[in-house]
Length: 242
Ligand code: C5P
Image (cartoon, rainbow, N blue to C red; front, side, top):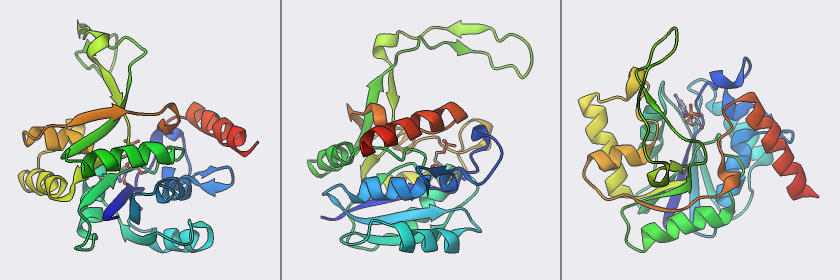
């Protein structure tokens, strides 16, 4: 296999409440990113996992992986991340060895993704799709608004829910396509709303005019963002260990 996974794990996780960076918060007694590394390393297609650590936390991440990582079979490396998710992914891409031709980007904050979902994304890329994203139908109705810091926000539209999908990770790419997208938007300084950078990699690839396709995502690939998500993640983990 020539597939590598880049795991951005440098976020502060402010929405989760005060405490350590999100990827270092514990789930079942282990930091979230360790679960994410193990989950992706379990996939048959994956030969290398690159963890993008908090800028001042690479050493600690390395030590945690030595102690609790997946062990045999898969190569691991750790690089320091940046101030936005987009920068962190770019730093991870720079660390890839030449033999990698397929890159999956997987949020550390999705620690419970099934190996079958990872393999399905990688297989679709290897089958010829330049960009592949796991996704699920949206259950909530979604409104578009005129954002306001304070007071009620006026609604400007209601997209047809049947045409919407909620996207997950790992998102998979032909290596040169993802690198081209990151180089282009880093050079342009093109950032998403609020200067936070792109919130997903496929969005940048779409802006290059490259076709992105969806494959079925999985409920257990949900993102741990808010405190309630941690409760759910603990419950899913406990059910698996029964
Ligand atoms: O903030 P959000 O939940 O979208 O973060 C998604 C992923 O991106 C998380 O795994 C987080 O650790 C990572 N991230 C990063 N570097 C940043 C910000 C977020 O690696 N500066």
